[in-house]
Length: 227
Image (cartoon, rainbow, N blue to C red):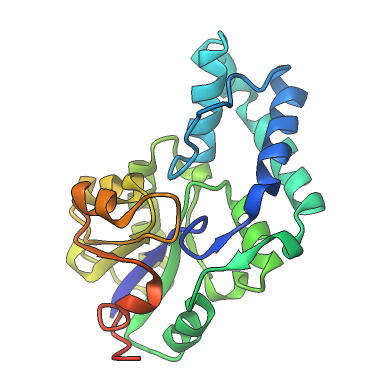
């Protein structure tokens, strides 16, 4: 059995521009400022890391940001659950069909490895009827650095399937250089898809084991054969 760990944003789906105003209003509600959002790169970072980056740059101490982080999480995910519109979202090419096929395979275990706080990530997935494909995973709740999420994902996979998964039996699938780096930190192979904002050439330069323009181009690698 092989363990496949999927990122959400840019890999499975896109929410369009609607999440940024929700995130920004939550920052203001909790911290009184959004910090400097212009030019900030959200891609591949955990939700806690984003808040820490923006708020420490705005002058708050790390300790103060960490103290208010649970309030920020609750404010943001509550707004996301209430305001996220499926009409402004889309599933990435081939994702639903690939997940359907993976669900039929007994030799593939499917989970998440995402920087989203769990409630927020599941709200995004549920809006497009994708949540049921992912019974477990690791989330922004499990650590600030994305590399912290890999041990959490492996531990939950072991709990679910009653066996440990070696790095060589695991594949991380994402669309940013942070997905690549977190996989490399734990010796896990990584498939990088260029369906987010990072060009395939940049993902290749970052050291991804495989790069593809979109997920259907990796059917053989995913053990699903030729299209």
